[in-house]
Every structure is written in C-alpha cells, then in structure tokens.
Image (cartoon, rainbow, N blue to C red; front, side, top):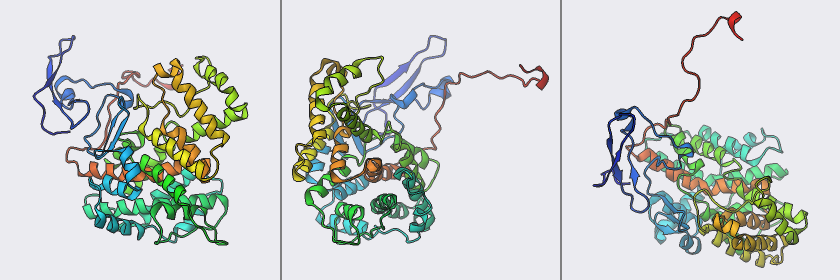
Length: 439
C-alpha cells in the first residue's frame, strides 16, 4: 500500500448529528482500494465493527496476494502455478524472504546456509523426552519451537537486521529436524541426524523414515511431491496464524516465540487441521460403502438439519477453484502412479466426490470448489506420513511465510503494538452491593 493517499476521498456521514468526515483512500499495486480509518475515533469518538476482520486491512504487505474471485495466488508477484513447477522450496523461501528469486550463485549460497543450520542443540533430545510418547506432534512443536529461544541467545535482538536474518535461517532449517524428531519420538524410534549432502526435502524424508538398521534411499518423485506441498503452503496472506505471528511480534516478542504462537493457532481444526478432516471424511464414506454411497452422503450434506459437512471444499477467501488444488491433484496422480496405487480406492472415491460436487447446482451456486486440503491429505498418506503429523507438515512449510511476514512487520515504521477495539455489550457501571443484599 502506498503511504501517499490517492486523490479519492471517502466521505463518512452520520445521522446522529456527528459531523461528516473525509477519510483518505489508498490504492494497492493490485487488489481493492483501502479506506484509512485511523483518524475515525479521534474525530468522531466511534470505532468500526468488523468481527473476523473480513473488511479490515491490518497492515500493508508486499509478500503475498490472493484474488479469491479469480482463484489467483501470487508470491511476490509470481503465480503459484509457475513457482510450484519451475522452482524448489528453498528458492521459494529465498523469494519470500528477499523479494526476488535467487540467481544460481545466490541459490547455492542460500542452500548452503540453510543446510549448515539443520542440526539442533543436543540438549533438545532431553527436552523431547519430557513429553509423553502419545503427545500430539503439534503440542511438541509448540513447546520445542518456543524453546529454541533458550538455546540461541545470539539472534534475539529484533531491532538488529542481522539477528533477524539468522533467526529466519535457523527456523527454516530446524523445523524439518524438529518435526521429524516429534514423529520419531512418537513411534519410539531413535532420532536421525540431518545430512548435508541431501536436499532440504530429501533430508527431511530421511530424518522421518530412515532407521539405523538399514540404508535409506529417497524416491525423487516422492521428494518432489513433498517439496511441492511445502511450496503450496509457504504463505497465504493475512490468515489466522499469520495474523497471530504479526500480533505476537508487535509486542516485541522474539521470533521463536512468535512462530510458536503461529503454530498454536495453526493447530486449530478450522485452520491447519482441514486436510486431516478431509481425509477422515473420505475414510468415513469408505467405511459406509464407498463410492456407491456418495449420493447418500451428498444428500446428508445438503440437509440443513444434518451435522454432516463436506470437508476439503470451499474456502474463506477463494470463491473460485483453489489454484493450489489443481497442482495438488496433479501431484496426487504422480505419486499414486509411481507407487502403483492409481487404483487406490480412497483416491478414486475422492475423484468421484469431486465430480459430483462440481456438477451439482447446490455446490456450484455456493462456489464450493475443492481446495488444497482435499488432495494434500491423500498425497501425504501415500508418502507414509501419519494423519497426526499433517498439521506439523503444514507448520514446517508455513514457517518461511510467517518469518517473512514478521520481518516485514518489524521493518514497517507504521506498525504499532496490536490492540483491537471492541463493541462492549455488558453491564454499565454499577456499585457492589453488600453480601447480604445480593440475590
């Protein structure tokens, strides 16, 4: 957003005698104009009311742009469709952090930098062993990522650009290690150390699935599929978890604490748990008879008195086909074909459900298109990732977006500590009655 108002003004008038005021209007490089209401309270004594912040821009940003009506997602101006096909995840990380794609030399330097920071402090092993074996991986991640600030005191000055850069690299590099450690701990297997001769995603898959008793060799198709999942989830504008990171950071909290806060928010089933919910929905349909029962399932979804929901369709922002879903669908075909699972009953069920939903007027009118979560759960299941770790994979991928957004906020001279207002509907001022007089 430009800090210079356009020639357009928004005039706000009132029917209660409050004088009308002019508010400046800002134009973004693309997307809707924004009315600057910062002077509203000072001039009128009134706030705006916007539950869920659906009509409120909380910041200006140059990182990610979504056009929900067109089904468009841009990272720093580049379409997600091109990035997911032509770039790898670390190139995408560099882009989100620095604003431009790296050239060959910059990519080599950045990859080497991340690779040298993949190990975590050895004492973190003892930290993990303080959790119960059956602890949810997201609980482990919230604790372990927040604890990184206790191990890396040399990069906590948020006003130092170098410190912020070091913290960004550490977070991107160490999240795969921590996610893999959470998984290994949950199944009682020894932790697997990272290796510097592997790519970012191949390294993660080895830390997840290798065991000391035998050699592990990664499959290039599987690695590319997971790398694409990382790219598709790297950032998504001012969603709930990103806003949480920004709000936490506005208080001056260190970056590790802010990312832990983002992970905690992502844990919610309405946010990061959607792909798990979509997969569980398919399991339920399969248990009830599979593709032959889809018609009955759809009928129950349409019934307003039913509690059955169609998971993996529709999106808070997208009112068109989620561009990430198209890419994830192609990746799903590639993975299942590579593994000889193209006749996988769950995937065939998903295809049949998608076809019906896209052709049914009920869903078409409501623009309930498949979203990325509809397919990503199937792909992760095929890769051998347990359902309980799906949101952890999401957190791993989204960390770069969170840290880029956090760094942008810290560098923005207009940002202040977050302090939303409220419409108070409780009791007006009253005096405390004596105990004997209380009913």
